[in-house]
Structure formats: structure tokens, C-alpha cells
Image (tube, rainbow, N blue to C red; front, side, top):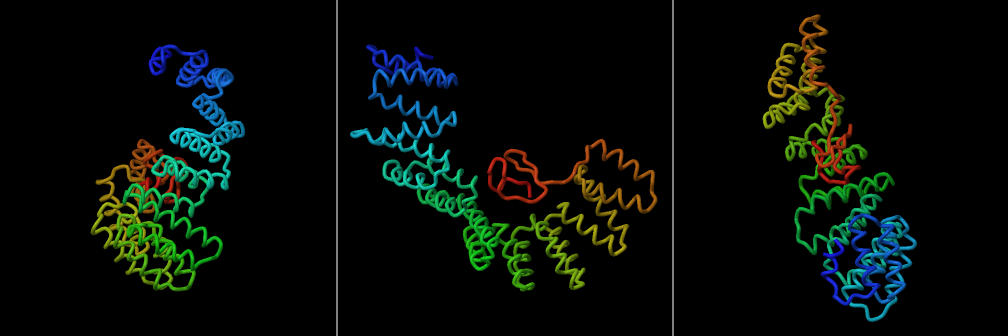
Length: 362
């Protein structure tokens, strides 16, 4: 590796250059302690080797010695006649230092310098956005991602901006600033007409204001737009309809969703539950078996069938189904992130583990 690195430097190398080459080789090998020692020797022999200072500061940051990293990188910003590209790298390293330290004021100041020197560096914004997401600073994340959108014209970012708006709205709800929250939920839908949580939260806000009909209208509109996620509002709708005694309206809703997605298990099982409440056991069994024929691993269908057969005293059939179910390792239904396989009992749009957006099997 050292031979390869030497090919990039003049043949008549000085001792400080040799130390620097050795440090780079050690960094590549992952030996940061060894690289640190070589870099310190390098700068002690040649204080003008900016690259060595940069690398040394970066190593301190990687080893969580942020104060040392900041000291080195800040001192580099005081040097005159730095090449603009090198100065940009210095500020980028300092930006990452303050990001690690969570020093918001300095992050903003350094960002202003970077915008002048490296205004098209999307990597800076990506790291900043990730940081804002981790800290749940949704307004700042929205501003940063909006900047990326303006630089890249990537329309695929709009759904994420919409989700930021939803998160901001939820924070305002927590502070009981409902009007601001509602405004943000509506803005989320303007950014992404298929933003599921925006519709759900808007309906919830209508309920808080005792506007049941408005909530019903919002959730029904959501179901028309995204029938494959209709189950996310079933609990809310069932509560509303059942309080009014409108069981037939809920059954009609299930049928309308199943017309488009005949084997959506959440909807089918809700309908089965309703059939059981009405005493139509034979039809409930028929629907469970229909789903099992299509999806043999359906925990919902198996659980309902076991319950029904047991209540009917059909012991042999129940035991047979139980044995088969155990063989299939029945486990509780949950939502899984397609990116990192994080599991959640609740539907999520932002994975708390890998921070991906829209990655759950809703």
C-alpha cells in the first residue's frame, strides 16, 4: 500500500512526506492510533502540510475526541492564502466536528461559510438532515431538504418533505397549537397527495374539534386514495359507526376495499369479526378459508378459524389446525422495516433504527 501511495508524490520525498504517506497507509488499514503518531511527526517537521492537520483532526473526531478535532480545524481556518478547495475541506471537517458535538449555533455559522465555498455539496446537507432527523428537529430538516430539492430538482424528495410537515404538525399538537398543526397537515397533502399520516392526523384533529362528519369525510377520502392502507383508520371508523349503530356502513366499507384488494387480510378479518358479531358463522369460516387458500401463513385467518372451531366444539379440526400452525411458527403480527427489518407493533413512516422513510410494510 505504501508503494502505491508513494506513486502520487514526488520522488525526492522529504522525511515529513514519508511520515505522511505511512500515516495514509495506516488510516486505510484502520490503525488510527498509528496514523495519529505519524501525522503528529509530520506536522512537527512541516507545519505547512495542511492535509496532515486535516487528517489528524478527522482522526480525533472519529475517536470521539471532538474538542481536539475542533481546535485543529479551527486553527486551520485562520491561515491566510489557503487554496479555496482546501479551505472548503477545512470547513467541511469543522462542520462534521460541530455536528458530532451538537453545537447548533456553530453548525449554522459553519454552514454559511460552506454555502459560499461549496454551495453544491449535497453531502453536507445529507449529513445535516440525518442529524436533524435524529434530534427530531423537523423544521430544520425541512429547510435543509428543501435546499437539496432546489439544488437537485429531485421530485422524489417531496413525499419526505410531506412527512416532515406531519412530524412538525404532531409537535404542535403536543403543544396544543392545533391551528398550526392542521395547517401543516394540509401542507403535507399539498406536497404529497398520498401522504397517509397527514390524512389520519387531519381526521384526528377534526374529532378533537367535535367535527365528526369532517373526520369521516377525510378518512373516507383517504381510503379512496389508498385502499391498500385502509386498515390504518378502521379502529377510528368503527368507533364512529358503532357509536351511531351504523354497522351496515362499516360492512359496506369493508366490501368496497375488498373489491379492489380481495385478499387484504386486515380488511377481510375485520369483516369476519363483523360476521361473527352478526352470528353468520358459516360465512365467517368461508372467508377465513378463502384467505388461507390464498395466504397459508396468515396468522389472522388461522387465529379466527381456531377460535370459531373451538367454540363450535370441533376439537379434531381445531387440533389439526393448531398443529399445522405451530409448525409454521405462528408469531404476533407486526410491521417490519424493509430496509433494516426493525419490527413495530404500530404503523410507522419513519424507522427509528435506520431512519428510512416509507420503508414499513403497511
